[in-house]
Image 1 (cartoon, rainbow, N blue to C red):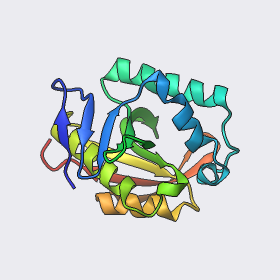
Image 2 (cartoon, rainbow, N blue to C red):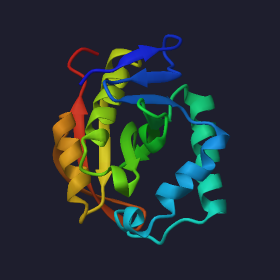
Image 3 (cartoon, rainbow, N blue to C red):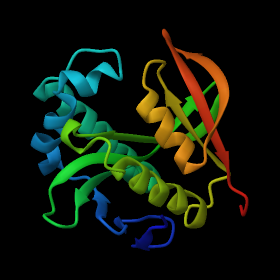
Length: 181
């Protein structure tokens, strides 16, 4: 589902889909993000313990720094119906196997799983990455044992290209090429 892009060329302050508003994160999102990353079931996908308030604050600051430096990052994903923040979805520039790539990532509240929100948001971010930022390709790194994230990646058009080691963790690597760079 394509997203409508608002903001300056090369950056976006928000994206919009049928049901979702994706906006730049702000420091006031901390409590809502703690509701995601403090949930043991959400964090099981990362194979780590729930984050505490200080850990989420540092995570949020890293994303805000990334937004300032690169003009994009992870968006806060809100339901248009009530403006409730239900997740994050966006891009993070990172080194993967010696290559600088933009990773498409997404995290959602457990009560919002299996409703198509992650796919809807990820499609809008993919379209933004290719249409506005003109990125050549995207990757998603998904830890084994997270079939829901794999299904989202596949629905967005990413294809599995194997496993990689990053740090001390193993990931499935999914990729998609921009056909109109």
